Image 1: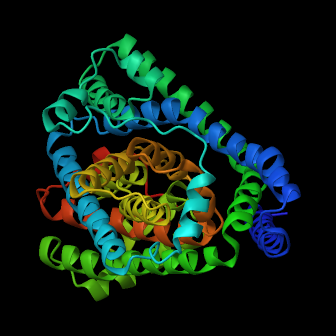
Image 2: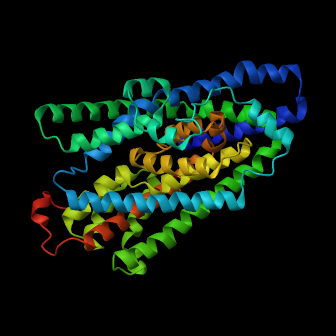
Length: 424
């Protein structure tokens, strides 16, 4: 049975059984036992499996994402690509954060329901680095011991170290450095294989988490989830058709109509596969044949972009974090929301181009900001559809980035140096 069908059955089954249990036996001893001793431990095990893989996946993905830019040899291309990615990803997250703050999809829950939701949280969140001091926060970004940072949950320090390590690795061309890069690729591959195994078990964990939430909250949980889906889709649509249209028109010198007409095959492929990596051959083909972009630009930007230019994922992560903060009644200051924006943009660099790869990073951000991580079960049930939507935005963003970078390249684009012929 396909994984999304298994997930759908688990979501519906867990939510319906939990809501029935809430309606028939709210406060009954047998329901407390079922939640506390059966469903909740299963859900926590799933969350812990996700957390277990955050450090190796985060470190290897970020280092490789930066190192693959080959900054020492492709300075101009890399700088333009990195600047575009940072700017457009920031815009994406700001769109999502603004929509969540204005529309408030997680607000309006009765106090009793919100307290019940908070009562479901048992995993201790990671502390905010540096406490409340701005100076302390800045100092905490640079760990004095990266191994200690990884062991103690200082993931922001680990992110900074990984980015710096990736830059240094990109600029070091020695046999030892190449061996180290191959080893990191192996670590990344193994981590992704483990993620696949955890996601295969996801229906069980998600079903258990939704049973716990529905048993505690009852039918009140349905409205905020529907509102959350609406906000994510609205944010993705605004970014897809407004931001990208302005980008290709103002900075790429291309008509938005011609752009979207040229990339529609890649958009359909991205939506159906929910994978930027699986869509890469199609994206390369439409970039070279339909958009007429220089081959060396298309290959560099789309290959790097499939790993690091994840605008849709960054928006999704920002919306999800703030939505769950609203559900659990966790008030985030503007400074904390700015931290969430920054982490979501950085996490976009390390979000692998495979289905559901955002979830470990969302769990990381929730822990850093003190938001109950169990809430991730609320959004996992609808993640398959949202993953398809945000992957479409990710792939379209890669192609928009290629249009932007290509405009600034000299006319003597050395396609011959790009190597093999276009991907079929």
